[in-house]
Image (cartoon, rainbow, N blue to C red):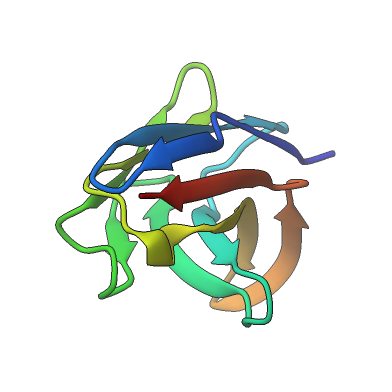
Length: 121
């Protein structure tokens, strides 16, 4: 019943900013970890940022610390990724992910279809 829809991707020049949104649907997300991943052509999909729904705990990949911020709107069930000081290496398809955890065990994983981010000179 979990569904994720990304939006907000586009083209931006080096040093610019974009904000991605992930609209989530489902009965409850109290035991979920929500994350953003990205995948560039010819590279593995990598973790970017995550947020724990229950207490807003956040975590970031070293490559984006200080530049990206993940947040949520609990009432609207939206996950945001604010991306500042963008670099060419940030160019990728960005995916929203929801991991359902029960007692430390992954019991469900859901993905959106992705949104393209292109950073150019």
